[in-house]
Amino acid sequence: MVYQSDSLSGEVTIGGAKNSALKLMAAALLAEGVTILHNVPDITDVTIMSELLMAMGVGVARFGNRVEIDVPAEINPEAPYELVSRMRASISVLGPLIARFGIATVAIPGGDDFGSRPIDMHLTGLERLGAKFSYEHGNIYGKAGKLRGAEVLLEFPSVGATENLMMAASLSVGNTVIDNAAREPEISDLSDLLNLMGAKVSGAGTSRITIEGVEQMVPVEFTVIPDRVEAATFMSAIAVCGGKALLRNARPEHMRMLIRKMEEMGMEITLDPAGIVIERNTTTKGVHVSTLPYPGLATDYKPFLVVALAVSEGLSMVTENIFAGRFRYIDELVRMGADIRAEGRHAVVTGVSCFSGAKVRAHDIRAGAALVVAGMGADGVTEVYEAEHIDRGYENLAGKLTAMGAQVERA
Image 1 (cartoon, rainbow, N blue to C red):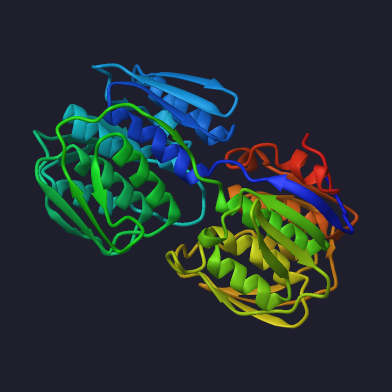
Image 2: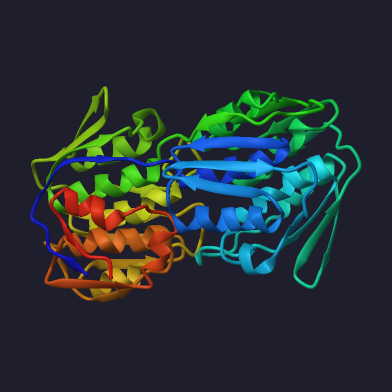
């Protein structure tokens, strides 16, 4: 249940990045022994990844926001359908399994419902390193002798493919070069972990990453970066409801394009040693936004910008260049009184004075959180159904919003 909130204030601590933590957990497979990860969010997707690793014979224990992953010398290198189908990031175990154990069985992954996201680039890249794959009964069967370094040119700067290749190449023979690599902060976080484990990765954060293969890697202790998408969620909440808040631990260098767009809307954003301070003192105005690979505007930010733009003055054009099917939540916002027309990859948003509370459905993690934010700016009561999607990516979202003055209840 979400009730209208006139103004928010105070501070909120941004937790560990979901999109980094899951891949770091997979990377632990590259070394025998106990890898310890700090600042791991307590969310459903982390639980699923933990269950996936345990199904392989890996020990996983959580102590607050610390996760300990104990990888034995031999495991069962199989990622079963009942777990992989619940979370697309499960495909990230493929590279480490092939590299360290020479064999892997991974069910074709599932996850959020917003369009096709093929894994061809993962497989083609790993094949360049010497892996061979076959398909049967909904599973990917992979095998390899010792992987060997190669030059890999990605057709698109896929985050998942870049990560899988980085992990696999770390235990290969010789050098691997990934051209047109993804540049997201989560790529740099993975690179930092791999290098601490003994890998030799350079160029992370640029479009050309070089990996010099090593024979063996070791378990380490590492801290996950803050979640830039969670920070964007609270930024949109201030944009919709007004007020002022400190987003503790938020890293502005990871959100430069989002900060620019929000400033264009009329938001006041200042950098603080503890994070980011965001404030809304005036009516926001419409802007044009387009999603692009990093350092462009992340597709995960778009639902929050659309919600904020829907109650801003004027006209906005929103273009989705990453996932063609990621406008499904717009129908739910229209139910709440938004004036949005979507066709193909484009949506025209005409600002209204406020939303109207309604019963709506969350189609995926970010859309669900965006609907909660919309409900905070709605006249009346909003009920967000299928809120389990939100739990996949947010630790205690309702509690954090309530601490800022919102009225949000998780049933």
